Length: 287
Ligand SMILES: *[C@@H]1O[C@H](CO)[C@@H](O)[C@H](O)[C@H]1NC(C)=O
Ligand SMILES: *[C@@H]1O[C@H](CO)[C@@H](O)[C@H](O)[C@H]1NC(C)=O
Ligand SMILES: *[C@@H]1O[C@H](CO)[C@@H](O)[C@H](O)[C@H]1NC(C)=O
Ligand SMILES: *[C@@H]1O[C@H](CO)[C@@H](O)[C@H](O)[C@H]1NC(C)=O
Ligand SMILES: *[C@@H]1O[C@H](CO)[C@@H](O)[C@H](O)[C@H]1NC(C)=O
Ligand SMILES: *[C@@H]1O[C@H](CO)[C@@H](O)[C@H](O)[C@H]1NC(C)=O
Ligand SMILES: *[C@@H]1O[C@H](CO)[C@@H](O)[C@H](O)[C@H]1NC(C)=O
Image (cartoon, rainbow, N blue to C red):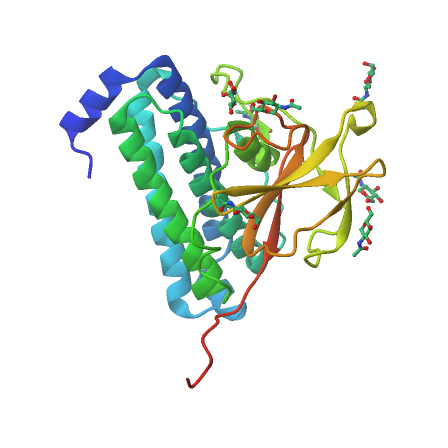
């Protein structure tokens, strides 16, 4: 897709901010690629068959891994000597099923991260590349969730962007250690969010907690990122907040100090978490 000429042109055009954004993207791609390499090494065709997956499923995951190789190569070439190198990673899957589910999460967060970053990109060629990669990651997330996991292929009429620190908070837990020479990223670190129910019914109350919560004396809110929309619910003095009753599919959420800011992560108080609200096809079978 990008010939040698485009690579050279893009590279010479990178602003400081675009360099930083591409370093952030490459870090996320490294996390994905290492995840697929590790899983595909661990789970052979027989393991997929034993777990009840049809034979073509593993082949598609190999294709996804090859896409990640291409993304890593592309970004590494663009960044040249500014490219961050591979870190050591740890992934919380325990069997093939949870590996598949984690793959869906990684693809979804990857797509959302590219989408959120696009707002801050200076160069149109970098933007075009970012949109292109975002699309393929969203397709991959949709394929895993629907074809493999038999759930909804999309979440609504708009995709949800995640900004730098929010997306990073969902990925940073996979990193064990990085070489100190890797460049600093355009992210702030936030304490992990603990929720009393990781699969709450809509409209129910949940309790949220995070390190430093007791020190915050101003009102705080749970920001629910869905579609191109953010819904805020207030958090009471006991950490209780009410899950909105109209969420669908994958929704990202975290604690913020401002119920109006929706276009960047400047008001975050905690890292994000992911909630899933699966929904069926509306089509009536046989209609
Ligand atoms: C990765 O882990 C290995 C083994 O623990 C260690 O030797 C190496 O320095 C680590 N690499 C990075 C990039 O942290
Ligand atoms: C998470 O919150 C629950 C209650 O909401 C609490 O019981 C648990 O100890 C908390 N876990 C951590 C790691 O903070
Ligand atoms: C949730 O908590 C609020 C008070 O914070 C209460 O008014 C409401 O009834 C609770 N809802 C449920 C479903 O428990
Ligand atoms: C709360 O604030 C105090 C004073 O600034 C600080 O020493 C403490 O570490 C903070 N606690 C947490 C959990 O952040
Ligand atoms: C965001 O969601 C709320 C609640 O459903 C709705 O009232 C509002 O119109 C939505 N805004 C946009 C821009 O979609
Ligand atoms: C919330 O953020 C908006 C936009 O950044 C800002 O205009 C507003 O003053 C902030 N409100 C509070 C209470 O900080
Ligand atoms: C976040 O957005 C607000 C306006 O909505 C803006 O004032 C502020 O500078 C932005 N912060 C960052 C870090 O981009």
